[in-house]
Image (cartoon, rainbow, N blue to C red; front, side, top):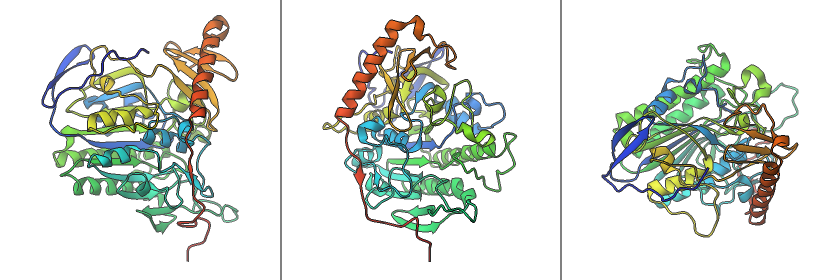
Length: 458
């Protein structure tokens, strides 16, 4: 993976000749910044979409995004669990750099992503975008840590994972926390009907788009599912041959369809960048209620490829050629700098980020290569556990070396055959991690209660 020679910026009204497969496509570039929609599922595996090879889960709307845009096959999240992964997406940084690497945030915790961090929403709002978050937040739920404090104008959803609820537990359970459904900073319902969560997030997103159709907007849609416990609405339950897990994925696909149809109806599709991805790999320990990583080894919570390589599709008819398949390495940390570039935003000069502008990869610029010279793997508790450089991936405990482009399933450890490569990568990983550790920024701790998830509702 080598660096780009020169950054490519197409002028407004220009024509981009995009290389997609073996043919070129002429694309008209409109004036003005694009609208942005990020759809972020929870615990969905690399192999859980029909466009990524699943034989029984039917995802026609997501498949259409891929067919009309780009599909990336080596796209990574920065952590194999929820909260750190979400922090990386929104800040463009490894979770450790922003202090969000120590596993997930539970209802009793009093810390979250620091409001001094610059999120995608912060950056886009500075450019005049309307910003909305509709779904699972999971980056802190104390006063001052919710979406409205992190650059979003609107928020509808739940502040942490759907299993951190009371309603589905046994009567004799000693678990004392409840799941709130929020509008802005206010709890409007405790223990919402989880069969309706996907629909409620979708309706809120569609409403937001309709109300902001005359200005640039950013809609962040982090779904609660397919994180367990699984719930599907009556319209989808029992409809997929894959069972309840398939029902849930197909309802999320329906949600994608509702959003894209709204963009079509309002004449916004051509200049809207829609991206779909997952926050980490499938929760394999739940067997049939967990997903599939396809050819990849492992799943959620692990640093095998199945834990951190996720599906990614993006559609932007004004810029991304149809049917684009990109096999270069990219990560969720790349979204912030990429959106800054395409939306006219600026990256904060007083802090380092770890992502890179990947416009060339998405636009199929001739000869484009990944800017990610190396990628660090951290455990679900934030400990350095590996590094990837080029096609080589080194796991540190125990020392295992894989050529993950020839051996995508990580079946053949070649560490003994490549001792010099092992030593070189190990030293590089330790050096890079030391830099991140030295310059890590803090989280924010808030001891006050905005709402008490352990107190019974009156």
